[in-house]
Image (cartoon, rainbow, N blue to C red; front, top):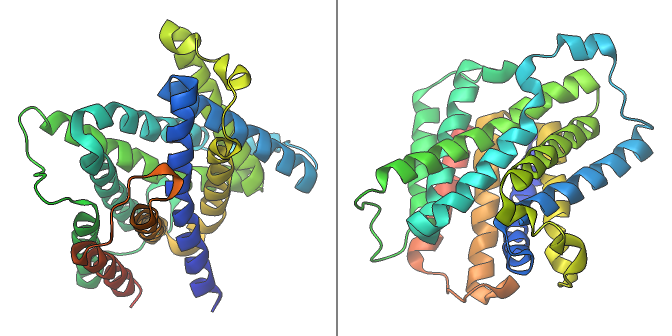
Length: 305
């Protein structure tokens, strides 16, 4: 029973991601730079997880022996998040909205499958079977149906490299929960691991901003430009996603977690589009998109038989 409860929680975490994306996208309009918007997102996430860790865990200390035994890649969860976000920023003007969503999702699904199949990042092994392969294939078909738009083909001259970048960006992003879960084991706390992830991501983005003057000049806008309060909620959504994923990934596996997150993301995105919420253009639900959601759900059922 608890396992299915965890699946519902992971689905709900996934529904927050379109809200986070909308908040960050609107913040970008006010801050004048997508990198600075991401920096603000990571700053809020670092401050919130710091406060929670101090209140709940009464400190941030990690036993020196446990820290020394951690693999080097356990500290790269924040960098994985930055890579995924940066890839999306680069993709949008090249591929358009549909492929910018689709390609990273394909990368996340494939990455989750291989992490589970081979136990990468010290994750539990979920052996490959015909049923699991069928489930993943059905999920991919469903995602394509939900995201694709009539009259917009996937092909195009000179797009292959950008499409590959999108898949790689999504694949790296799917590694983040597995990486952070190992850090959580060493820190004996998902909150401490999440704080380290946000802090490292913030430091990396800050470095990028200072290396490029056009982004550096916009950092002051975080504190000086007046903008709607809800545009700050991207960091809050990020905290819920990262902490929840770090805590639950060992229970359900990276592959299933990734797909449930994507399912929640797709359901929330369809609702946002249908009603034109959060400033999005209204896009009523079509039979194709509804069928796609059903296919994703069917794939999840196949993965749990």
